[in-house]
Amino acid sequence: MFDMSHLTELSATLEQSVIEKDIEKIQLLCEENDRFILTIQPLENPVDNGKVKRFILLHQAATQLIRDVHAEMQKQLYQTNKTRKGVSKYKGVKNAE
Image 1 (tube, rainbow, N blue to C red):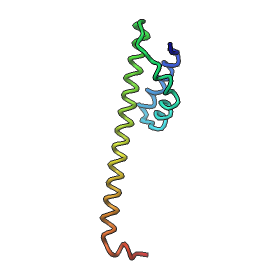
Image 2: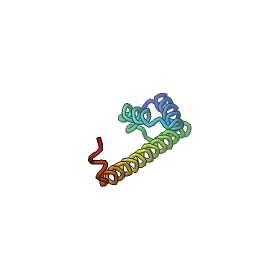
Image 3: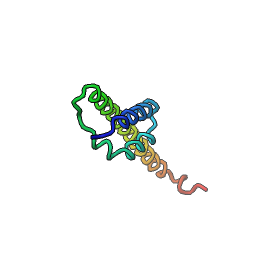
Image 4: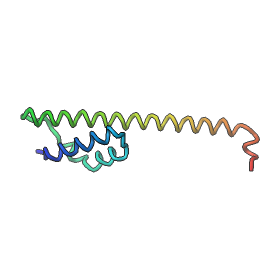
C-alpha cells in the first residue's frame, strides 16, 4: 500500500504547479515520484479513494498541459524552420556580412 500523506502532499504541489503552469516543476515532480505514482490503486475507504481520484484528475490536467506546451513548441519550431528556409532563398542574405 502507498503512503496517503505523500499522495496528499504530492496532489497539493502538483495542483499548484498546474495552476502556475510551471512545466519544469511538473516534469520534475512526475519524474521524481514515478515509482510512487505507479503504486497508486483504488481504495475501499471512500475518503481515501476520493483523494486518489483527485490526484488522478490533477495528473491528467498536468499531462494535458505538458502535451499542449509540447505541441506549441513543435509548431513554433516548424515556423522557425519554415522562415529560415524562406529567408535563405534571397541571394542578399547569403552574401550579407
